[in-house]
Image (cartoon, rainbow, N blue to C red; front, side):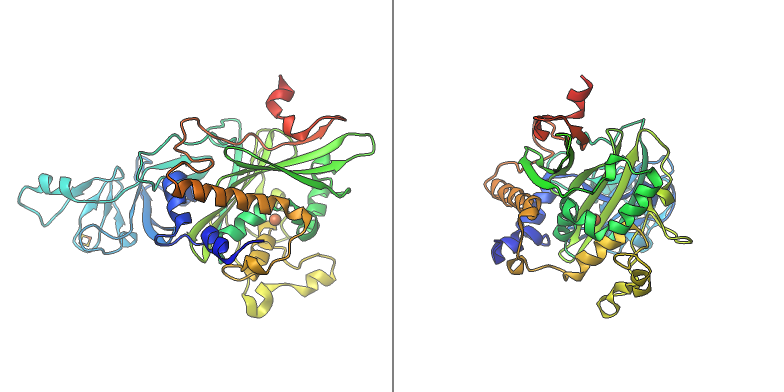
Length: 416
Ligand code: FES
Ligand SMILES: [Fe+2]
């Protein structure tokens, strides 16, 4: 049972909220997909944890990431000109390089270079990895970037998307660790997908699974286990990497799915949905199983066709024609609609959980435990600052032989 205090602790990120401070000081934060930042093009507005920033790419490909307010007199640097070798504020023309240095103050004739060196531009390190842009907002020196299976993987073809979802980030995270909903909410998508791939065991949803979790030093492993008549067990294991990265198994070791729900502020989050494949070139329209004629925009993947008043554009004709939900723009639309429909910050004191919600319950325990550690001056689970680099393994989708425990299985061991 979640208390009101726990609900606030886990969800609120703005200002001095402990969750916002813990995230800022311990984890790399995704803020967009790589293709959103074009060299020498307009800067991008970024909002994370209730604070405003601006990012841009110079002609050499280097990314600058600053506080949005110009250090001179706070005009928005989202309005600035990207001059290729730096961002120039349109108010008085002060110019800043992607490295975060003030390089020009046109009105300052006296000791110009000395003056520039003193301008307190707040800038932050960025990693462009796995098709995603990540920033380090913490006070500590930026730590090593975690080893995620789709980052720095030359074999992987990537398809990464981002959407803005109008609800608190934890609703997004809970949606991604809750694999129980897939066979209900996404059933029309699953059926179409199985038709396309020819019904591999990868999406076999015939038997009811049992759910088990295991805590790790980076977060949680959540397994859906289906016993089969021949004594084998079909196991799918989602990896939850604190606080917002979820790796969902694809159909094998070479394919996987990424979800991340990253707090913009208390009432909005960035929802990342991506796929990687080492075996095929990803054709997004096939992977998304789009309706005929439907398009997609990886920079704004889910555009709800309405709000509460019109049930977010739900298409009842589509339901009459056999679609389960009436939301068929793409698979992520179904996730966003149900999460937003709960309200901007859901009241978890009112929920009534079942035994299949075990992953959600344990994920919240990980978060609350981490907050306690953080407030006591220790590192939370999965902190990028830990000495030992922590990274989740490739998420597992496999058949286990009789007597084999899912926790003991990893692709590395299977290959050895
Ligand atoms: S406010 Fe940006 S240069 Fe003056
Ligand atoms: Fe989903």
